[in-house]
Image (cartoon, rainbow, N blue to C red; front, side, top):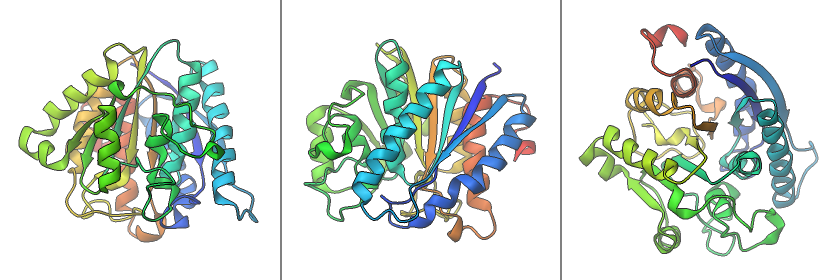
Length: 295
């Protein structure tokens, strides 16, 4: 299936552990555009959104940036393009999926691939970092209207997390209370990624009009992808995740994808960037005979 894809940059690190994540779009988008062209996809380079250089109010800035990103994503979908958002820290999810939900005629499903739950609010966060909160925003759990996401855009029964291995009790309590399905890394190992991904896909597609995939690069083992904002030991093997994404991403009801938390400063040899691009190519180009020739 040939897709018409728009690449959109979310070049900010205001919500993350390291502001250097803001440099990720300038590194990844050219690599991804070249790889997509080689697999025959139609590619449009969309906007790259950045905060003002003198921005000091990070909460207000992230709220404005997410609103602008939501508009850019919605504009891409109006032109029948699949939005592919490259962060930046994972707060970009607040904009990506708000924009997708705005355009979708029906319910949105979401597969969240991440080492973390990202389900704190400002009232429960241990660090105050906004990149630990976007899934809570999307679920309508924000306790501060400043973020502009308190209404939520996705129902808990349509959300599945894969690869979780670092979280705080407050996040688990919230997701348990909402009934969100969380596949911890232990379950991924015990059942196999294929079985877990198949169940996650059922959750994201049953009763929805389309589904999206949100990837935090720290879901992958730090040995393969050390260039991330908040690395966590162990994780999903990159090649296994790419193999699953080739099947999941080949579906016509995929309505958007994003990748966040790549940190170029910690990737001097480029291997983390190669993993990031391969994951996105797997989802956007689907099965192919020789995937390694593209990256």
